[in-house]
Image (cartoon, rainbow over all chains, first blue to last red; front, top):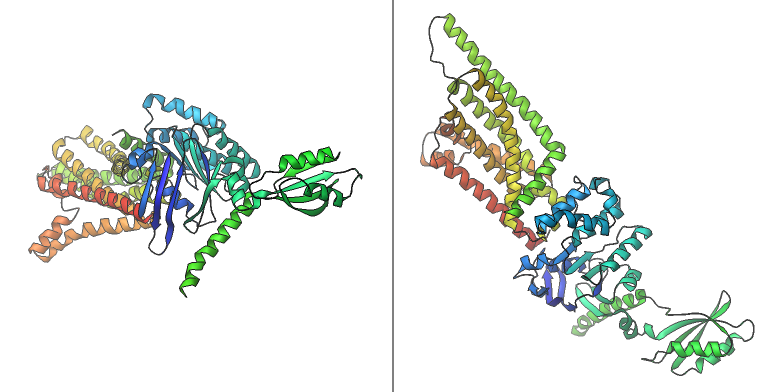
Length: 325
Length: 256
């Protein structure tokens, strides 16, 4: 659905996006990750034809963003970081205007407007002025604006920034509901959000592509995916050392670290050999020994993956410079 | 066409839900009312005086009331018009709503024309107030409507022309005050160019006078629609809109 090849955007003084390539399939939800100033917004602005790339090629829904921007714009819904709202308009009038602007046939403008207001849960404020709305409502009106013409591709720039946790959950579930019909790219630096919503991540840092992969395989690739944290309750029948020894016997386990006691159980961190999923065997081992398995989870979040990747990218970028000296 | 109208309609909405339209209408109604009353009162007094002295001066309501009224209104226009055009693009840039327009399936030219058209209609709304004032002269007097019509058309064209330049100025900044200030400056500059006629009639002076926005009003108020003046106004409108279009494009390349 989206193809990006060698995309570069140079400003007068610095390079915002440097030779980025990736592709997004139809129906995917992709998380676009990176620290502030990494080039996320610039990339999104190029994809939405807000500005042209300096070099490289990008196609959306089969149309080139530079050669056929008009076609691309028809197939894209865009929510910029600050929702593009007119404070002096009320919600319904604003969405009606956007519906017309997106070339929705006159006969369907009204029904489409009502539909997206229901869908984005803003129907209860439809006659309110946008300037009087709370941040959460504004964000939802922004989202309504982006989906009003039922675009194939949705590009959302930090859709949950500045929202409180409740609004964030609401917005997130709204985005999840939109998946399936639309191909979605959303940028964020809130990692749990990516884990909750996205199947695939694209990580960029300082204008360069760091990684593009599924969430799971990213964890494996950086090594953190091989570790699990396990919590076992023995009801006084076995010592921590005994449990540790039992776990070490499970096939494929490389190392078991004692992480002390939490609540009613002993906590261990189990590292497996690369490429082996030992979780099932670990659970069985614990249960067969007559102990209670309280918890079995990955101790690492995408947070660590992300930090590992963006840090190592900085190091590897520094290496050639050192080599020249 | 549909897109132009969509844009234009939203702009008119913005004028009339904000105080801008009402403030401008009020100011204009006051000024236009005072001018009309003054001109008419002077004319009536001059009429009485000529009767009392037993001499009959040639009295002409078109020349003595309507023509000076229109020329006053065209000067008032120079001051009010930058206030109409200042927000067109500056506000979109400040609010970030320009991103919505620029990523919607609409051509830049449609955005520019739609916005300019809404400003012209807003200016037209002001001129309707003038028509209401002048209708009393037609009700109680017997002026020739043709020179008034051409003069009115001239004032309207002049406004459309300053609005096109104002649209361009608005596209250069995020700040409405800056847009208005530059607009005033340019309007005044184009006006005082006509003062150069005081320095003789060399070719330079003639060129400067031709470029002046107000020197083209006289022929209209005399009831003449001269192609020379039409060409001037239409080409200034074209220039203003063309520059706006270029300015929008450069905005994308710079992506400020």
